[in-house]
Image (cartoon, rainbow, N blue to C red; front, side, top):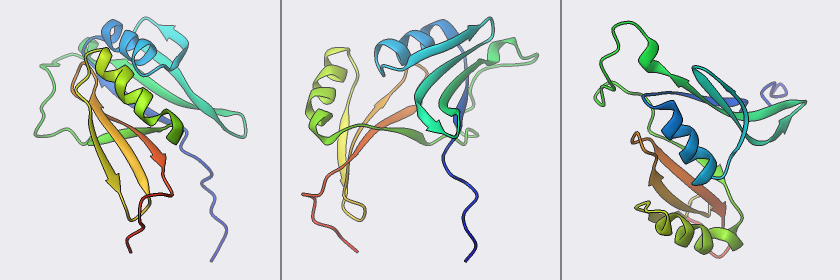
Length: 140
């Protein structure tokens, strides 16, 4: 098998209805660092990344698009996206998110031994905080 050429996820980009509200959520609730704000977009650092390309979450204001009428939930392709956290922060992050008014659900994924927190951003995107937990019995 040839060596994989893909080394990391470079960025996730979302089109949003209210760039200011979403910027505040991803800085104050999720805890991402704003790298650069432009009039119609905002770029956040997720992690150092690979070979000089920082892992990015990018938000683009879709309301400037001609003919835009709002999100069609039946046609969106985004299910969710995840940020990795440390297991020792799992309960504290759950409590912090709940204290900020987020409705948090939890689950485990035994096939990979992951533990997850799920919550929604102000525009309804499902966001996940996930960590590896060796204490979860692994299922094949």
